[in-house]
Image 1: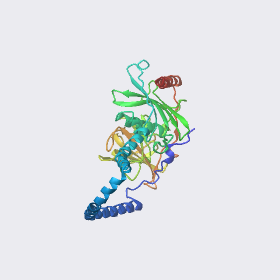
Image 2: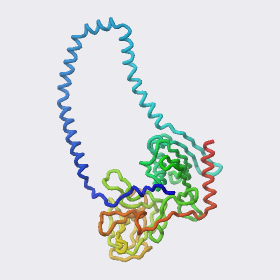
Image 3: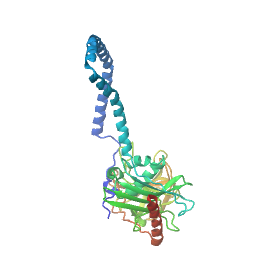
Image 4: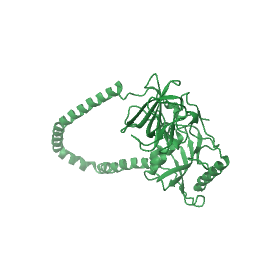
Length: 390
């Protein structure tokens, strides 16, 4: 049962126009005033410190004979106090170090399985979360492997929980992963995540049926973890995975992500999801790359397609649902081939709709077709995890 979806926390209804709010401006003004006061204080501080040092030196010189006499009469009491003063800094330095080490103390196990999958480098990893997911992984794996695995886990879990908010200390993670030598990448093959927030264990198995272009992740019952748009209303019929959703936070911007990113190979056909008129075709090297905009009066929305490699329509042209309007690319401000698909309301251009929540886009969970092959593969991955603990 889906008790939570990251889509529940995504509210991109009104995209920020980029101007900071009054609250942010007030905070910035207060910060500037504080900095000015700090600088003024630093300019006046040296003279005050000089006077204080001179006064202290005079006082110490005047009281020196008394201090010597008190030290002679104090005996062992003074020796104990001095010993404590010398040792206390060492104790204060060691305690934080011990707490940091305990924070990231994890259970770890790696297992290589050449007999079950000849020629493939497959390992198993078990750990308990101690802090953030990325920090915990980077105590176990070298960089950039730990960042990659953390990102892949986040994409798997985002359909059930918010990794940043709902990860709990003590959550346990067991996974089988494969190093893809030719692609210099890592692929997660099986995930078992025991969530304190959900009070249940989430399981994901990677499976690519024979003849399929891409593999995807299914639960133990062969149900795909991620939602899909019905094919007749989807801009892509074939893609690897969804890497970003509307409302995702982007560092350095006031507004969140405004579209859905579909990871796919360059040249993958991009299709019109509804009957539409082409309102814009343009090129923007710094941001959107090659872009197409469609207007759908019947649905009351317009859709945008960014980072295209090629466009096959012209402004003013009418298209039907399923017509090819272009190809997936990697143009503009893009770090990997993907399609940025964006849905906006016609009456309010700043209102952004989530295709997985909007009624115009029917959604579903795909069910694995080759049940026998999937079950066999999932059992093999599960046995690797079990053997790695023995």
